[in-house]
Every structure is written in structure tokens, then in C-alpha cells.
Length: 638
Ligand code: COA
Ligand code: AMP
Image 1 (cartoon, protein in one colour):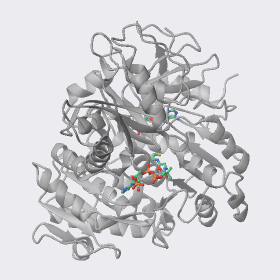
Image 2: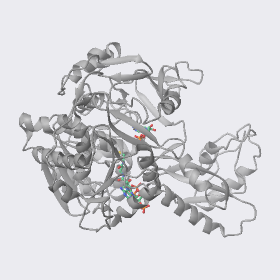
Image 3: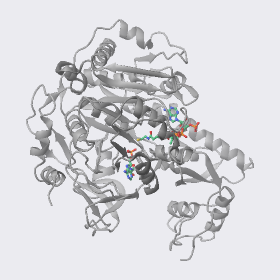
């Protein structure tokens, strides 16, 4: 039987120009596009070339002009500072225009990059919007990254200005940001001409005269700046994400296609209407924060909740229910790990009973595979649909979902339901043939990708082609493996590269290995992602020491743990490593990371036929069981 989803899906693939051209009419354009989709430089596709827009205008000013000036645009809810503050669309417009004025005064204009290294305060969203207003390109860096990671991004993005704050607050811990920022600038070969620092009452920062500027003072003396028309294809932002090496990939997002896709998704994927309250409990440093704390809800005229807290411990596992109830949230989007944390602290959902959630309609989960247990727990306790959906930093919005605004399909636990309109998802085997329903293979998307997805990587067209487009010509490689069942439901099983997912955060084991290898006592190393009941996965290191090292092993483990925290950041959650005599390898020298992971997780594994020395696995197993892993080897038979 045909339903609105089937119709939309078919049209989006058969006639993408008509489909997305129609959706684009919901936005305001200074100049209409010449063409919806330019495929003349395929596989580099461009959406809405010739069009002129401003994303900030569509997210803010437009709503003031259309009568939403007094509606809440952002509700800032910060249990860590005991603050709740509302900004109306009019106030958001005023503050954004002033910050844009201040940035313009510092020489920031169209195409210039601005790094935003901010905690979860409304000024982070204002910073992003102010850049968009000027046609400058923002690059938000997550606060949990170390100075070294920030430096890598400064070198790559070459920002004119960096916007930051004196501190972030992690539950009970205050984290001074300015020393990290100073260190990052010190480490970087590129120096921004200025930093603008938001003074938070918890921490006072040392300011460097001539370079560092106080946010409030800068804004107070600035004249409001108007929106600057930019080309639809101009970059709106760069968001760095983990690649397979320590050099992160700068995912580029354009202005026009991004606006069109996000606005369309608000109604059709999330079934949210303008004026409703939408909450993505994530961080502006991640893609979820870009798309669904800031741009999606604001483009749609919703009220967005910006939450500076945790699902548990701020103050308890009822925090999410308190926010939903207090701000009349209709839709919540978060990562399964947040629900696992809540379930762990309040397994019977007792705290839920304290709050009125009668207006709450839907819970969306993404960022990692939703384990059926957690999903069912949420369904049982919330009594609303719980929708798993699949996406990536690169895609910017959902590849597969139960599109609640089009048609509600029955939920199959473990599946994010069906490909979203615009995404021609297929499963290919190693020989690039289509897999049969149920057969696991590489999840790929037939080109062109829909609007909103990455047009390229920042300053790295070749890396874009190598990473995503070359392996399966004509397709985008998601680097996820999975299958599609007889009913068209997509199942995402695992990554095919060395990316791991820790508490919904995407991390590269390759990058961690680079850090471990830099320790003077380490000859060789490997990092694998092992199962964790709360965070989904955790990194686990294996170290082979150089000959003649006499330092106690515990000391070396402590040092490498500290090194990863210092170089990558606390978000890597790298806490455990074990020292082994050798790493298991194939005869051609490839490290058998998959086998080590299976042993650690006590999963069944096959002795790899090409292993150079099977006895190594016994030592690995012994070591792992001494630190709480490998609780019972499931079979090492060939
Ligand atoms: N600035 C500085 N440090 C940060 C940080 C930030 N913005 N965000 C996290 N960290 C630190 C944490 O304090 C923690 O440090 P620790 O090792 O000293 O304890 C470390 O990085 C790991 O953080 P996290 O993985 O978030 O673990 P946690 O134990 O603090 O919290 C959860 C666990 C599940 C509660 C938390 O991960 C969470 O709320 N997840 C929600 C999911 C989410 O936001 N996903 C984003 C994509 S949708
Ligand atoms: P990120 O780029 O941080 O959003 O991480 C993207 C990766 O997270 C994907 O490639 C998947 O491996 C994983 N992921 C995200 N959402 C889901 C989901 N709903 N189900 C399974 N895996 C997911």
C-alpha cells in the first residue's frame, strides 16, 4: 500500500530536482537558484547553485519579521549553574547582530574562518549564527578535546578569530578553557589575530593585551550588523570529525542545501511544527548540536533547549524528565548512552513519576546503535514512540529513520527503520554486487547525496574522494556495515574502519595509537574498542615495550593514559591498557585488532588462518582476564 513516505521516497530518487526544489520554497532566498542540482563536476555535486541566501536570516530575522519576535528561540537550562534563561527570537536577533558587528570590527568577513571553542551556553549558538550572518565559516570545537586537538584544527582552518569562554562546567568540575586555548595557539603554526572571551563568573581568565578581547565589551561597543547574502554553495561551517589517523577530517557544510534539508527534516522526520519546543540533548561541538540544537529548530521557528548538564548527576537521573516537564518539550533527541546512564541509576523509572510529561510526544535516539534493551526500557517508561535513527557527521541529518511526519512504520527493535527520502541506501558485497535482503555488507548511498550532506572536506578534495567515493564508484561509502531486510528496514551493525563510538562520541583508535606510539618506552601498540554497558564502547590499549625498559609496567600504563588525556582529551575516555610481549599479527604483518577485541569481549572468534604465532593469543587472554576482560574464552578452534 502506498503511503506518504513511499511517495516522498520514490519522488526524491526519481526526480530530486523537483523534490528538493519544492522543499527549498519554504526558505527565503535573496536570489533563486539557477539549477537545483549541478552534477557537471560529479562526483562533486552542488545544490542550488546560483542561489543567494543567508542562513542566519532564515533562522532568526525571518521569524521576527513574521511575528515570532516574542516567542522563545532558545531556552538555556543549566543545572550546573542553577540557571534558566530564555532568549526570544528578537533578543537572539539583537545579540547575534551585535556579535556579528563586533566580529566585522575585527576584520571578519565573508569566507573567513572563526573557531568557536565554547561550553554549552547560549553564546555558543549566538557565535555560530553571528558567523553565518556575516558569511564567515565557523568551526566549532568540542570542549572535551585537549589543546593539541584544538591546535590541529586551528592549523587546518586558519581562523581569523577564535571565540571562547573562560570555562566550561562538567557536572561538579569547572574546566578553565583559556589556558587550553592559549596552549593551542602556542602549539599552532597559524595564529588568530584575536580571541573574544566570554567571562563566566566561575573563572577569571588571564587576558593577553592586544590579542584577547572581552566578549561583553566587544559586543557593547559594536553596531548591529545585517545579514550578508552568500552563495548557496558557500560554506557555512567546517566540523572536524575523527578520521582513521590523528589528522581529523574537516566536514564542510554549504548554506543552501543545508537549510533546505534541515527545514524539511523538522516536519517530515521529527514531525515538529513551528512554535513547538524541541530539545536535542547533545553538545554544540557535535553534528547533532549543529543540526538540531541550533540550525534545524531555529530554521523551523521552534524553541530549542540548550542544556548544560548531564543525564545523571545534575542532580540525578530525573534531570531529563525535569527539563521536559518544565519547558514543555514535545520532542527529545539524544544518544542511547544517556538513557543507559539513566536506566542504570533509576532502573524502575521512579523519578519519572515526579513529573508531568503529558505533552511529550516522541523520543529520537542516534549517535550509536540503540540496543533493544534500552530502547524498550524507554518505550515502557515513557509510553511514547522511541525512534532510532542513523546518521553521521558527514551526512548532517538522518540517512535512515522512521519519518514520523510522513508515515509511522512499526518499530523493529535494532533497526533505525527505512532510508529517509533523498538517501538511496544500498548494501554491497566485497565484489560490489548488491547483497540479498538480510545479507550483511557495506552500507553505501548511491550518488548524488541529498542536500545537507558534505560537498567535500575542507581543503582536501582528494581526501574526500579517497575516503568516501573511490572504493564503491558511484556510491558514498558510509563505513558502516549492515543489511536491509525484506521489508526495507535498514540494520546498522558496525563500522568497517577503526572508528569507535564511546558514549555517542566518535573517536579514532588510529589517533590514540599515534599517541601511545609516541611514548618513549613503547615499541608497538594497538587500540581496540571493547564493549561497555554504559558507554557502548571503550578504548583498550595493548602495548609492546622496547627492549631493555625497566620501568614498572603500571607506571607506563599510567603515563600513556595521561598522555592520551593530554593530547586528545578527556572525551577519549582512554583509561585502560595492558602490556604484552607481542601483538598478534598475520604473516604479512597486519595486526589482528578484531581478534583482540573479540577475546576482550569474550566473544566467539575463529583462529585467523594467517596468524603468525597462535600462542600469543593465550598471553593476551591471560592479561585481559587479569584486568577484568576476557571472562571466558569462547573458542579458539580454527
Ligand atoms: N569539556 C570538558 N570535558 C568534557 C566535556 C566538555 N565539554 N565533555 C565531556 N568531558 C569529559 C568528562 O568530564 C569526562 O571526564 P572524566 O574522564 O574526567 O570523567 C570525559 O570527558 C568523558 O566524558 P563522557 O564520555 O561524556 O562521559 P561521562 O562519564 O562524563 O558521562 C554520559 C557519561 C553517558 C552521561 C555522557 O556521555 C552523556 O551525557 N552522553 C550523552 C550523549 C551525547 O551527548 N552524545 C553526543 C552525540 S548525540
Ligand atoms: P558521528 O559522525 O559522530 O555522528 O558518528 C557516526 C557513526 O555513529 C555512524 O557511522 C555509525 O557507526 C554510528 N551511528 C550513528 N547513529 C547510529 C544508529 N542509529 N545506529 C547505529 N549506529 C549509529
